Length: 260
Image (cartoon, rainbow, N blue to C red; front, side):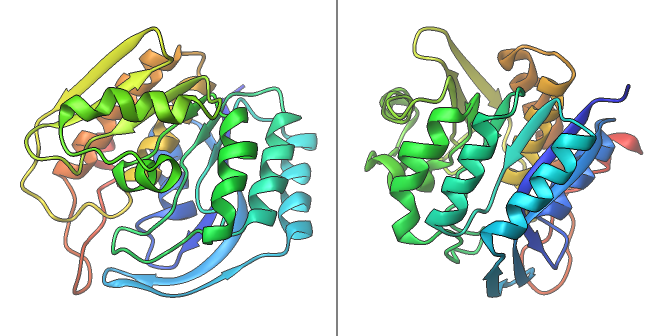
């Protein structure tokens, strides 16, 4: 049977990030993508104009409907908006026999807040402990731990700080640093530095969602965490290189670059 991956995230009406990016990634990587919608955003290439979270009971019902009937080989989380949603999703994941990739989305590409400040403690104490892999960017690391990453040398202490909250692995995404795009994957004992050339392309909307979804696809196919992350890094690097202008602001990465 084709591997099945479930994304639990918000909708991006512009199609570049969120649920839309997740499902495009899953299609491109040959798995069956399914979704639990947590929030609706009015969003385009220039930013987020509005966001409305769904009731917890709606999120629970979507999750149970999919998992109890179709089943999943991996779960990926994105925008969860509130402490109540974070707690509910963490509980659902803890009862699901599948690896979970947690992208602790705090702000959009344009700097718009997508997670209530009151939800940070729930992410730390409820969601990260059930994560197989957590994939924070540097802003999210600072939000969660207070650690500021200013150079490649800071990646290791940042990873250690996130690991204290309980994920099995953490991928610190160093894409906001100067020079090559360098990420650190570690479980506290084993380390992998993933390095890729930086492409001169500002159209990078959806990179975080795309990377986390690609990792989930690899895990659903039975790959180890390091194998899944390395393959996802290669996929998203190609998608960034092929990113294209859309609207007046930052365009999306090209999720179908490898299928053409």
